[in-house]
Length: 135
Image (tube, rainbow, N blue to C red):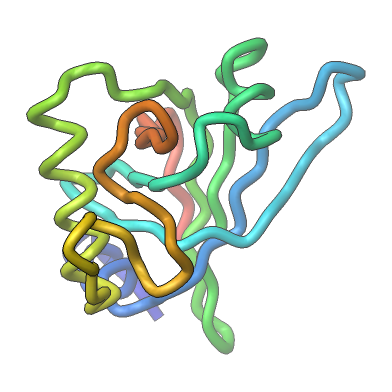
C-alpha cells in the first residue's frame, strides 16, 4: 500500500482505471470509470467534449478521482479544469496514448475511431488536487 507520495506516483502510473466524480446540475454526484494519466500530483483525463462529465465540470469545478486495487487506494479531491493550451493538450494526449499503448490510424483515430488529437471533439480534464488520501 502507498506510504509516500513517491509510492502514490508509482501506484497511479501502474493502474489503468479510475473513478471520476463530478457534481451534476441538481447537485447530485455523477461518477464514471475513466482512463487517466498522472503527473506531478495531478490527474489528466482525455474525453469527449460533449460528455456529461465535461458539462458538469463547466458548471461546478469540484471533482474527485478514486483509483484502487485490492486494498490499496488513492483518492484525490480538488478542482477540475479543461486544458486550453494546445501544446499541453497535445502532450497530455500523447501521454494517454503512451500509457495505454494505443495505435492510431493515419487520421489519428484510435481503435474505436475516436480522433484523439481533434480539439473540436476531444478535451483534457486536469484535476488539481486540494487533498490526496492514500492507503
